[in-house]
Length: 266
Image (cartoon, rainbow, N blue to C red; front, side):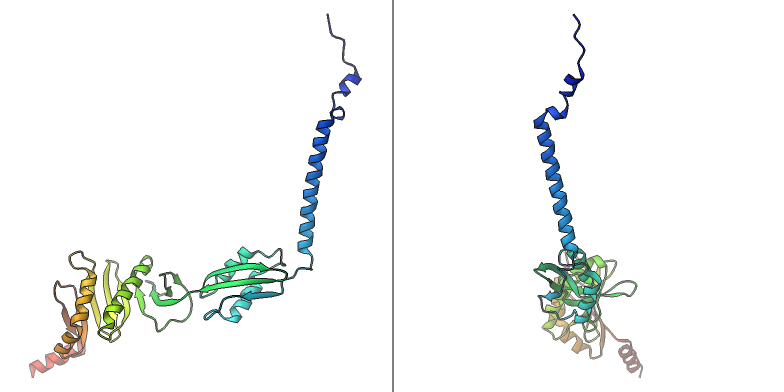
């Protein structure tokens, strides 16, 4: 027995208009979506109104290297928009590009200002690259570019070894302080050999690190015998070679050596 054909009325009863639960769900979703879109549009509109201008940048930390002129210039270049639209991450990165700025933090302060905190680099040495470029070394061994530091000790060596140079300089400074000398240049060669230039111009050859002859032992021996050895030579010393087990060699300067040779011939 065949089924009678469906009438137009019966087909229409299967549509959305006769499914109230589904219609209510769709209606609720449309209302929620419209409300979110309207709220977002209102927020964007309010944020762009000229009612929330940024009027002040407050610097919370005392500064010794970064100048007021640098801050004013950076502020004009990196802060755009109003209280709501200013991109703080972009502005922070801009402040960190200033010389002597190690780290910057920026936050909003209602209703019309930003607060800036800056950590400055503390330079403890200069570092010289192979091409002659000079950069500064911070307390943690970090390299940065800034003017100044002419009176700081000089490090010469691989860029990756700045922390090793910093540690070795501190160790040498403690030992040499007992004999009234200061290391003004510390060099680590490509062959990992160490040299120290003292403030009196004398070059100390320490050589490479060796388990049988540690650098600490060579430095200690230098501190114990430096003054007596230099006094015994009686002429200005140019180089002290500490690479010998249990001893060291002294080489006089060129002028002193020439004078000694001339006296020996007369």
